Length: 294
Image (tube, rainbow, N blue to C red; front, side, top):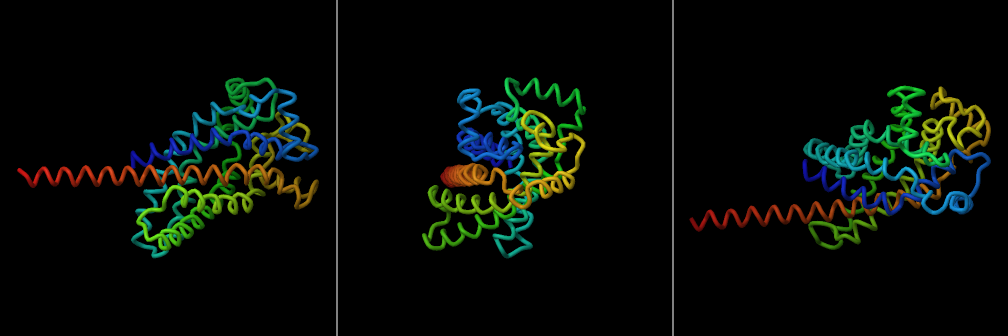
């Protein structure tokens, strides 16, 4: 479990750092009024605050992402081991394990999401300033604001993701007649699984993001952007103001971010895990050989 924790943390941090600008654009698109395109959002942000603004909130994101992702993958592997004797379908095991791992890690990820997203939608503020403001205005409980909406966003995402990923890699491994999928195969399977899962769960993410940002920064321009609203009230307001289209805000940057991020993470994770497994097997074989000589 310790190796799963470390490998998951490293793999996620690599992927998240590479694709973080898309997360910034996603967040801003989901709360901005009036709505603008992804390209226009990026242009206006860079023009006003410079290229570095695309990475606003990255330090706090990585601070939580490393332990959060470690917990996620350790919980994922533990859940898979517990479920495998009882379920014959690898895809079903992956789906349930993915949802369980998400819920286990959300306690770490949610505070980071609240702080990170509020940094993203404001100008000239840092993570420490936003954290101080959050604690001053709502106390520690404010850091877990929208955790229910977060569960409704990420549990279905990871359930769908691992369901698709496990099914795709099973067929790929069978076609290639190999025990483990090569890096590029894992990358391709993860990309396909991530794109579909990201698109299907975007409506939940819109509600979660608007709820967690509240009335700060760009969020203050939305009608009824009070900090005390529930997820249901946010969804009702979106439907009344924009209809179904309002729940698709930020879908393009979300897909462009999560598909390669999830793909790169799972490919790195699977490759490092397979390499570690081979190393442990080689070490065990060597120890056995030496013992036999004695």
